[in-house]
Structure formats: C-alpha cells, structure tokens
Amino acid sequence: NNTSKMKLNIPSILLALSFSETAAFSIVKSFNVGTVTPSTTTLAMENDNFEESPTGQSRLGGNQRAPTVQEISVMDDMITKLSQAKPYDLPNAVSKAIRVVSSPRFFMRIAERADQSTDETEKEQLAALASNLVTTIEAVVSTTEEKLDDRAKDVERVVKAAAEPDSGEFMVPLSVERVDAMRMVLNKIHPADQDETFLSTVDAWMNKSHEDGLDGMVAIMQKVLQIYAGESIARARVELQANVAAAVAGEAQQVADQLVAKEEAAGPKPSAETMDKLMGMDTDLWDVEMRKVFASDGGVSADSLTAEVQRTMEAVILGLDNGSMAQRVQAEYLKELVTRIQ
Image 1 (cartoon, rainbow, N blue to C red):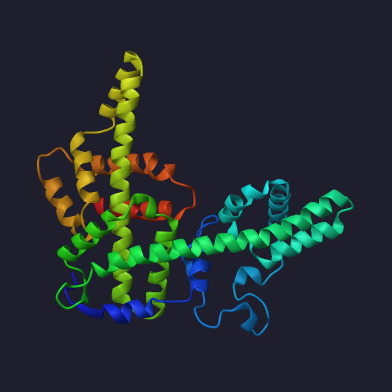
Image 2: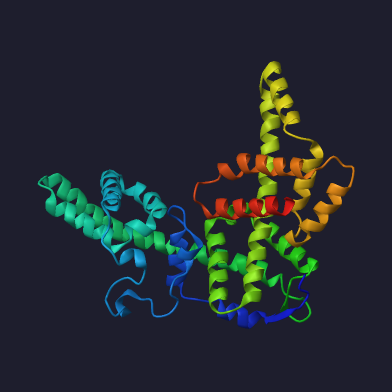
C-alpha cells in the first residue's frame, strides 16, 4: 500500500471545484435521461456559451448532427403527448426529460409539425405547446438550480469532513478517522436528499478534479461515492428484511412458513452479518476483514458471501430506477466487493 500523503488545502480546492451554474446544471440534466456513461459527464468548462461558439452551434457532439429517424420518432411521440397534456401536468413531464425538450432541435420539430399539419386545431395546440414550454422550462430550470445549490452544500460538508481538523488540509490517502467523519456527516443528510442531483454533483466535482490534475481530490470524491453506496445498500437491506417480516405476519400460516423456509435456504446468517459489516466499513479495510472472517470457524466462506452479495444485487440494485446514477454507483460498489472476495 502506498502510504505517502498528499496535502490539499480546503479553500483552494473548493475554489477550483467552483464552476458556472450553466455547466453544472448541464451535467445534472445529463443524468436525468437514460443511461449515461462516465465520458458523457465531461463538459467544456470554459467558453461554452452557445452564442460564443465560432460556428454558432452546440459544442456537444450529439447536437452537431442531424437527428436520426428513431430520435425524430421519439420527439414526435413526446410532442404529441405534451400537446395533449394539461398545463399543470407539464412541469413534471418536462423535468423528467429536460435535456430533450429544452433543446433547440425539439422546438424546431414542433415548428416542422405545425407547418406540415393541415388541421387548424393541431396547429393551435402545437403553437400553445411551444409557448407553454418556454415558461415551464424556465420554472423547472430555476427550481433545479436551487436544488443543485442545496446538494452542492451537502457535498461540500461531506468533503470538508475529510480534512484534518487541526490544519484544515486533506491528507491522502485518508485515515480511518477521516473516513468515519465523512460517514457521520453523510448519515446526517436525509436519504431523500442523497438523490440523483447529489450524486451528479459529486461526479461533476470528481470530473473537474480529474481535469485539473487533482488526483487526491478525485480519490476523496470516490470515497464519498463508496460511503454513499455502502450506507444506501445497508438501509435497503434492513428495509427488505422488514418487508419480509411484514409479509410473513400478514400471510396465511402455510404461506408464512414458505417465506421463512425460503429465507433460511437463502444462506447462513453469518454471511448476512458479514455483508452488513462490510457495508459500514472503509473499502480499504475489506481485504483484511474478509481474510480474518474466512480463516475463522464462523461459517462464512467466499462462496456464501458471494451468494449474499448476489442476492442483494437482485433484491436491491435491480429495484432502483433503471439507468439512474444511484443504480450505477451501487452496482459498481457491489461488483468491486465480488472482485475482492474472489
């Protein structure tokens, strides 16, 4: 293990991680639609205004080409649904697909549909939709920016906990005490606030740190995601057990007996206890802890622990929104655990 330390000063780091609300909001939007790979979260941080582009076009690669037939079909479907929606339903619909409906190409498609239509009622609906979308998008963006600011403050509190209390500097790799301090601060943030915006903010800061060559801060941001994943999975496992207990209590005796038998057949309790312990532990300590457990006579083997992780993947991770960052972060966390076990 590399025991060298890297000193990072808090004020300079937070200043380096500050970037325009426009860029930050663009990053958040990229996570709200579909599955996003890490490479798509890196946006230009300087001179990225549309008006300042030499070509007058978006600097994002996906906006520099003509839409495909499939993309036009998706836009047409959204336009039809939005044009028939009640005005009070628009904010929720727009917020779920902000990146698509706020693009110039989407408005161009509305205009094209209006020009092609021979139905005056449809023309009026499309004209009203374009007008309503402008107002709705402004409101959604304003709300999202406020939410982004709140989540950025949450992330900042967790990151500050990684600093040495005496000097205010970050010492990388982090000590056990600093990781525990970060975990304590994170657990004070309501689970509902540890949402996609929170995770997107961490990811954005991590990308910016990488671009600026701040490897130590990249490691700290990765630690934030690891702690988040462990705590989130641990909570989900507790909730899952509670749901099973409720199901047992509410079912007929025969069904209850079957549920209990299924739980017992799922694996020995020691494996579940070891899994819970690993979720609340610094990932740097996993190997030592697992070697100790496997060498004891506690009934935990590599196979039984792997099976416990697999059950968690099926019961917890697959239940998250498909393509969400929460799902991606937690899935990668458990995949790393399986790799360590093996």
